[in-house]
Image 1 (tube, rainbow, N blue to C red):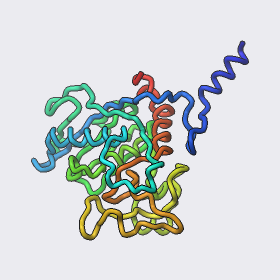
Image 2 (cartoon, rainbow, N blue to C red):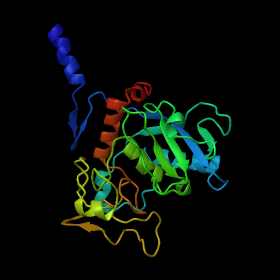
Image 3 (tube, rainbow, N blue to C red):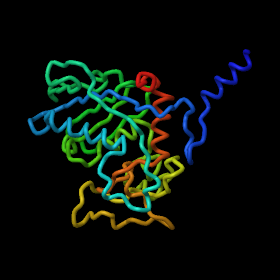
Image 4 (tube, helix red, strand yellow):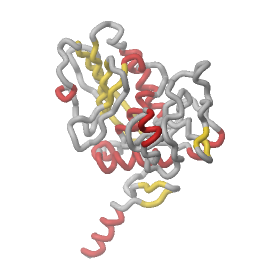
Length: 269
């Protein structure tokens, strides 16, 4: 009996192959629900983005993570790669002195550091909206610095900035590799492998822009890399055509939740 129980335990903790990516055997496909807290750090009214814009950003986040967003820009060559992470994000039911549940507003004059404002970072997505040059995540459920930074100008624009950064928060690298961003250094020296089997290698972002315009069309001008087409529609790239995660990326994010944020998975029955 002991040997049988040990065998069952090993099987339950062992990933199995689904398509090209390893899927955790515990994953039954349930919709995983993730609470979100938005911390708005502002010095003027423009930076103090409205509840309506934040809720619009949350709506887009939810559409992107259940494969219900607008995919009119999807390249025909990528149709068979599209995956569904099947994640749901909702405002954490908590109250603050100002704002509504799940939205905290802090004057920059009173702001000290993000660590003091974090709410259960392992089991809650903390999004800091502020004036900042780049949208950046700090990744890893094992440490206290675990949040997503979002430039206030990118809130409610349907540019998928929060989707991109949440992908990082859930364990994804850029489509163009494990290190850095879109800088010249990483285009030349960066690792072009994001460790996902169904994403092709490429060095550097496809295009550094987030809305379609004359000098930034869709599809982008820089569409080919070596002997294949860049996966420019991917949320983990940079360009205005972003609209999908791959099957492998979807499995990877769900695996990371089960491995590092197990409470979220267990509470989503």
